[in-house]
Figure 1 (cartoon, rainbow, N blue to C red):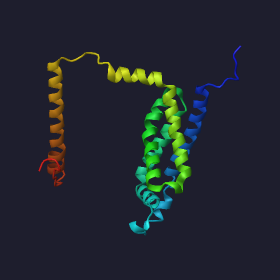
Figure 2: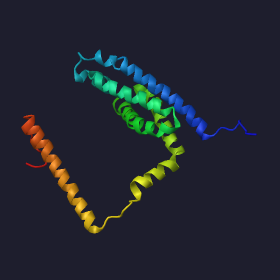
Figure 3: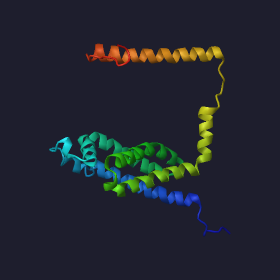
Figure 4: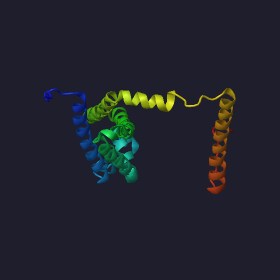
Length: 196
């Protein structure tokens, strides 16, 4: 007979994933409805000198509805992916950079006035780290398979050729983007910071 009184890390993780998913849906929806950045639009008539770091952040993010909608969709999709064991690592991959960015903006541009938001987003990030901790064996296997163990080790001649191809590709990409696309097709005057 199984003992159902024990609580394991997977149970706690699942509860925190559901909790975090709910808030990702919630934050995504208030962005999609235009409610989250409405405050920023009220500040459009002020000069930059009149704005605090927090106000400046809200003005910046309220300017583009498309940007807010994209972040909202990522948050909603990430929340949905958090709900399932098979997709929770995809959720981590999707949500971690977004939440870390939000945390850094909250701390560096607003600070203490939005301490509650800083605490919330810190908890969501800790949930993502906790998921990674619980899946550390699978993550290390995937890392090893993708990065650490080459299938066919290259000879010195093949490595040298590969480096040559990489350098040539970088140079050709630079020329195509900056001279062919920008200058000839779009008529943009391009002045390189690297090559004068």
